[in-house]
Image (cartoon, rainbow, N blue to C red):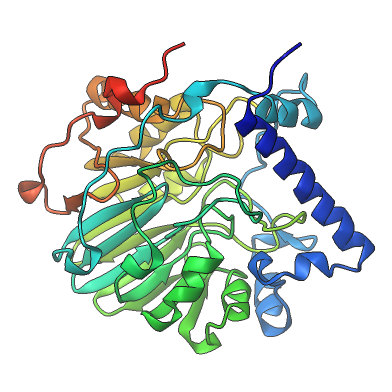
Length: 381
């Protein structure tokens, strides 16, 4: 009989519990999913603006291109079962993730610090930005999809005052209710895709501090222009998908362009981004949590290489890895793939540890080592 690890049993119980929540919510007229951390449904003027978007139809947002589906020989139950029952121990590091020790409040100007996964603190041209600061678990029930040991070095109280909170979409590993609620008193303004502001308002953010953008719209913060750009993904904090928009962003100031892809799979949107921004100084490009069973959700390794080839950034930082186990690959595989791609394609790869400072000016940038290759971190089969 196949043995199921204790961690896998917890994930199975979590999936069952979440489905139970949904069933209970349906029976109770939505009362269970009205819990605060699930967020809120857009309505009123916000919903009317969403409905006016060219990317809205039939009550939901749509990608620029149809999402690539799972292999036709695999049912949804088989895909879910493959994830829940995967006992590969290499999905998690064998020891705590090594990390830097930058005090975020002391981050120098024109520097970024990786918070793990897709989270960053950026100082650029006098503007400070927190991007997707998900510091807690990536699931709405306690005890599931928690950060790896060592990847959890920052607490909410460690996050500094900032000019902008930038959210790419409303999934739990990007929009963290606990963190975002605590940031109300520290951050002047939030910028997010259409509809996501409904969650922030429910958590106490005043409407006049929230700017919601459609793809290709922009807003200015001091000397910085923030442009919302398409990504190929989906959204949702409960059982219904795509009630809010998802996006990547370009942060532009003084001729410098910093691109954050958000969550995305391959698509023609990358060529559109290249046309709009032919010079990208650093691309923070999602690289992790992919699988052949969900090819339309995240960038598979070959698609990641293809994306770098289209965008032609001056440097690339591979993100969306090293913090949560929400796929089936070995935890270090995305970084190893990016490292191999950088050598074969000849682009500079930025490979900080969580908590390391990265100078935006390459002349001030320290060299990085492949820290994930430490034998103590690798689970050998």
